Amino acid sequence: MPGRLIVLSNRIPTEGPPSGGLVVALHELLAERGGLWIGAASDFADEPSETFQPVAGEERYEKATFDLTEDEHADYYLGYANSVLWPLCHHRTDLLAMERRYADGYRAVNARVARMLAQIVGPEDRIWVHDYHFLPLALELRRLGVAARVGMFLHIPFPAAADISALTESDEFYQWFAAFDLVGLQTEADVARCLDAYRRHPSGEMLLDGRVKLDGSIFKVRSFPIGIDGKTFADIAKTPPAHDPVHIRADARLILGVDRLDYSKGIPHRFRGFSTYLARRDPCSPRATLLQITPPSRESVMAYQEITRELEALSGRINGQYGEIDWTPIRFVVRSVPRETLVPLYRMASVGLVTPLADGMNLVAKEFVAAQDPDDPGVLVLSRGAGAAEQMTDALIVNPYDAEDVGDAIEKGLTMPLEERRSRHAALMEVVRNTDIFEWGNRFIDALGAVKKPAAQMRETPG
Ligand code: ADP
Image (cartoon, rainbow, N blue to C red; front, top):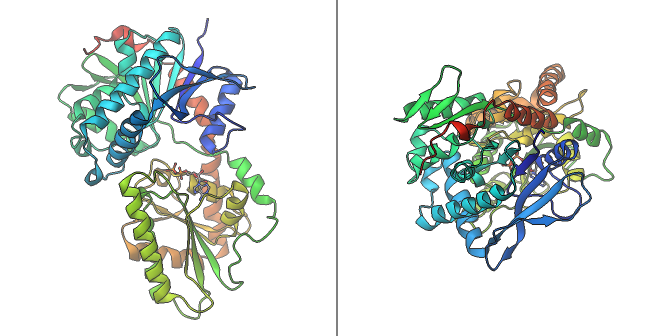
């Protein structure tokens, strides 16, 4: 009998209809294929429990949560996941928060989730693990003798070997990935970094069939570039908004930035790039307002508090220098906005400014393109540090660290002739269509199912 699909992700929709691109996609994949979706409970528990809690729902699949105590949340989630692995994978080893209890908490939560999974998993099931919160999961499952296929999709960049060596647990880091049967990464560049890191490892071996061997573990690594539900975005964009969502002056052009408040998104660099554009702009050209919409994120992590202060100071300074009585060059809004507001903003914008310093993929780039009017599209300015730049080569690709490069691209985007805008947009739209999120999920699940032999049978499990 074919096994079921078990999806493990940090968050699952526990109340109301699912929202957000990935959550909706996983929901639909599970509704089609059946299975079980497991994620962290939203409330803290007093004591960690050893069984999943079923979540009642009407879906055609099951849902369950594992609980976390407040201490576990601090060490495993805020600590190791978001203050060690996140900076590590985004080339910010300077921000690594080296606290031994973080790594201990991270291992302990993963070991507990693995014990709970081992109680319910069958040998033919496929376990699809999402992201950096659960790197040790496959290794823990193998230790418990679980033979099911286990795949990991890492949504964020795979770090370079030199960065991995900054981790106290660097050797474990290699073992964690190697214990999966399939490791899915966003881009070919990520795959190259992963292979390079294992090649440099003293026990790493490249097999003739392309798989990677580390001690007794063998795994396959492939890129599965994630996308969006482009059709839904294009459909929302076609509906005129009930009211003008921005009220910018009629003679001003809109430049739009939409990112979580995160140091990896390069928002201060973007502001400096915009400032360079303002310094050089012809005073007779139409004014352009940069609207930066930024939902707050991980506010209890120190590095995130610092960036808020930096951005407030920077936008204030630029507005003081270049603003006029009837024009504020930067509008910096720290809040989440509903998709019905976001999509018309994408469509109104002359330039979409997507300039992360490092990003696994960056879905905003794809959403911006999907929302454009093909007859009169805006221009995407895209950082070469975003995974999306590997596919979206018809965007204006910039070096996000170089304010002059970003400033020039803004100028070029604002003055680009219609024909060129249309042809670039058509090529970018093709990329959006080819990386549809539903196909992405099916491709990963099928690839995991195609792993021939559950790796546990071939392994000498490390002790
Ligand atoms: P990340 O996953 O690192 O936050 P992505 O660009 O891949 O970056 O995905 C961000 C998602 O969050 C997109 O779907 C985008 O529409 C959404 N988003 C970003 N900013 C806002 C905002 N201010 N309000 C609502 N949604 C937002």
